[in-house]
Length: 441
Image 1 (cartoon, helix red, strand yellow):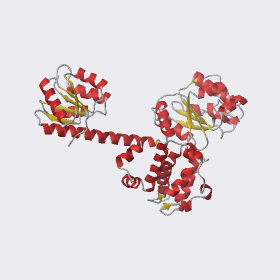
Image 2 (cartoon, helix red, strand yellow):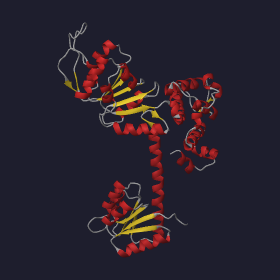
Image 3 (cartoon, one colour):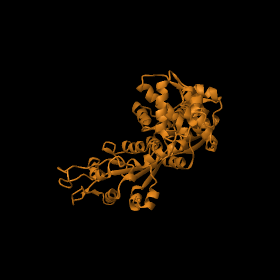
């Protein structure tokens, strides 16, 4: 069998062994690089694209185990094959723990070398594919946030960058796009996850009460303040406070929030004594704060304090490739809730749902899916879909997309229609599973 020409780095302090390995590997149609020490090998790894590392264990100054450890840390995707003339159980275990895929004892035949090299390269490809699939699965279903669009993966990237620090975050977007879900993902995936997460709906608390609810009050601060009461900032100390609908906060509350952000301290209503506080503030709004600044209803200095990291919660109509993963998620969720199983949805039904602009965003889609699951027996088809969603002509924006995005959206529809059976989907699409997997990345 003629093997693909891969780059293999051979490391051994014995010149004769280097030459023997090189001749054999060239006869298998591999391209080889040689190094007689660990330091030489590291230089090759840094400057060349290597597909397999073969190293002896017993070498002067720095041994092969140290090279395996270095390569595992800095070049984890490169498979490692160990060769040695001094075999032992401890040596083998140590080599594998350090990152080696296989272990070859000197002297070995040409055929044994060939088989070991093939196994290492094959296992490396399988491990890589599994890692990619696990990564894609994790990111497609990230902390309750479901999606498969470019916007979805950009959002996950931002969350990953901010989750472990106390940077102030402002989430802007339409109602129903999942702003609180984003805030919870930031908190519960980061290093402060064990600390409190407190949600405050600034639009749901009367303006006269919001200040005392947030900052607390001392006894006698106002009529009815019969005892000292801690505020929500106290409750959230050490963790995260999520200020939803921040645009509804009064100018008085805005002024006090600015002090929290500037001085890292709060003062209870009726008190003159500020208290230091460690807290992360995440705000959200569906209002245009820039327009509110112009009209004088929102403080510009507070806006810039809140907007250290800005996250846009993109409307569903601008990320249509997220619709199918969301549909599948809601089917699983409400199957369990309503005691149903094995519910499928036809490609035509998916097509109608994908074309809809979803003015109510994810919240609207979830409500529709809940209704469809209640009403169906085992299959969701066009006849169950509400009239207002049917017969909508595709808009220009449905076509003005990159070909890859349109193709991927179609593949996801097929996968959904066959209950995510990749073999069956590949047959329908007339491609192999490898091509299918690549097109889903």
